[in-house]
Image 1 (cartoon, helix red, strand yellow):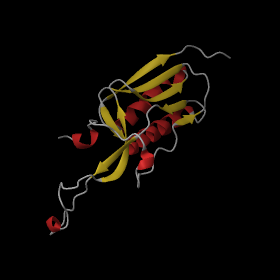
Image 2 (cartoon, rainbow, N blue to C red):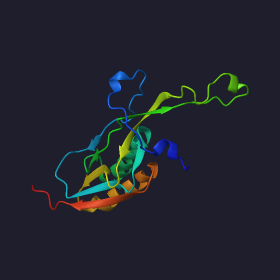
Image 3 (spheres, helix red, strand yellow):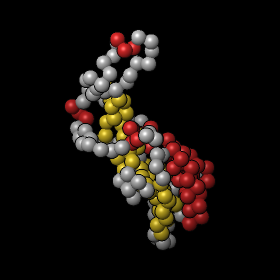
Image 4 (cartoon, helix red, strand yellow):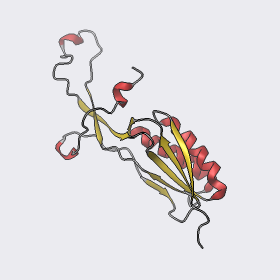
Length: 168
């Protein structure tokens, strides 16, 4: 199974959360960080396969990348942006694992489940996160994204896009 129960994105996701009572709060604090400016390079984190990523993993990835890059470049030496949003509501039919539990629960009867988390469905080749940096900090941005992709399911790749010298 390899954890496929929680990652496989088949079926129709929920489109409107306003109809759902008791939905979990999104854990992502910020979708943009650093200082907006004209940068020479854009370092992207791309997903190689179709997966579903929970909002906790997205936030852990963002924090890891920003912290690593901030040590090297400072607060105003980069700009980061998350490119995905966890729209999908994930449900779980929790089972009791104690003695006598078979008399208390109903198994798969009425197994709709409670809203547990939020997830983002990511297509193959889709960009998850972007870091904008200048020339001397490209390697630091690659290192930051390499450390951040450990927090994500699947196998991401890092792509560098060159914009050229910023105009003064």
